[in-house]
Length: 164
Image: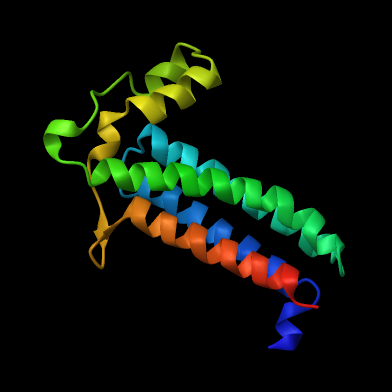
């Protein structure tokens, strides 16, 4: 176990996991035909941030306190992902009469060049379409799986950063 905690291996594993999760998201969108809601799109940013930071850390191979220099921005991406996935799971578990009204879709907002702050605000305050469950695996929706992956990858990064 001590060997895996050293050097680049944890960062490579995180990068590969983030890449695989993003690849599945694009597969679900473009091959399976599942249109992502605004929160789905925002959740991808967290994996992109985590994967990019893990790739840079794998290339650099930090030691001792240098691992925390990568862990801090990584945790920012993880926090973003946990917040968006948590909100998504919460929306999906609301009773139908409490689901917020749907606002304009993400593609509409991007086509008419809405500011990013407006898109994020709409995703967190409106986005009734985010309450729909189009795909499940082992009884969990895609946002629930995403939330589990955010937790697992965050715990793994904290473990890898802490081990000497």
